[in-house]
Length: 102
Image (cartoon, rainbow, N blue to C red; front, side, top):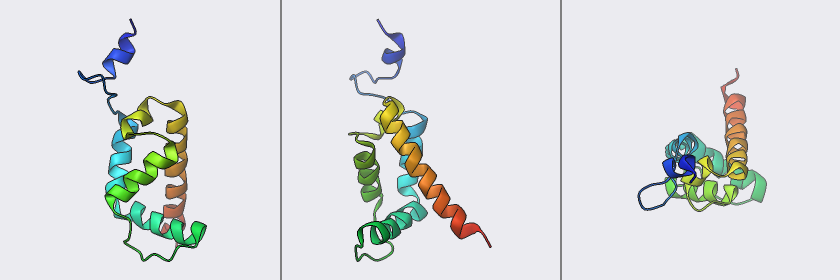
């Protein structure tokens, strides 16, 4: 029996989220992240959307789709999804650094 796997699931057998799931949840609530999604959509896909268009739910959907998972909890259990999430964080943080420099 794999006790490590048991410890990472709920009583109902669902995966429990850890550090990455919490980071993803906080990112979805971050207005700056959602603004980055707006600007990314305009730049990458030539979409005509206003700043402030993405909601926390849109941000959640973006992360789930980009990481190919059904829930944020999977980010802590799927190495490929974790790698994709780390890339999202990297690109967002790079965007932030660009706008924080004098």
